Structures are given as structure tokens and as C-alpha cells.
Amino acid sequence: MLALSRKKNEAIVINNNIEITVLDIRGDQIKLGISAPKEIPIYRKEVYVQIQNENKQANDMAGIEALKKLL
Image 1 (cartoon, rainbow, N blue to C red):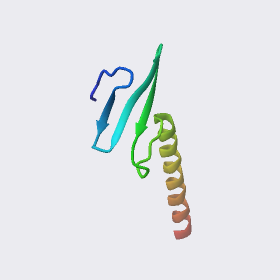
Image 2 (spheres, rainbow, N blue to C red):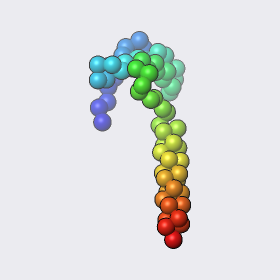
Image 3 (cartoon, rainbow, N blue to C red):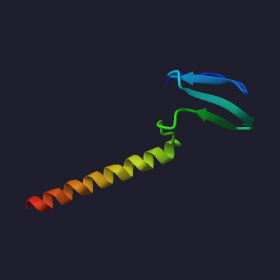
């Protein structure tokens, strides 16, 4: 993991086309702005994990249904 220090209105650039800017700092919260191409999905980690879990469950159920059809 790369750890960087940034101040308000400072940014980092990832892969030449994603820019993350520190918009505001209040106490223990930081507000970030993310500029990226529309085709790049951006999720909060907890939402991403939930999507991955739901996709895995759906895939598992599809596999079970396929097995039932074979039997």
C-alpha cells in the first residue's frame, strides 16, 4: 500500500486518467473528489464488497440450478 499525505485542494493522479482531490478536512473526516472516465466504476468499499458477495451468491445458485438440470 502506498500512503501519501495531502492537504486540502491537493490531488493525486492514478494511471494518467484518474484524479483524486482532497476537497475538505473536518476533524476525522476527509471529503474526496474523484475524476475518472465514465467507464471506470467507482464504489465505496462496503458497497463493492456487497456487490461481490451478491454476484458470488447468484453464481453459486446458477451452478446449483445447472446441476439440477443435469440430474
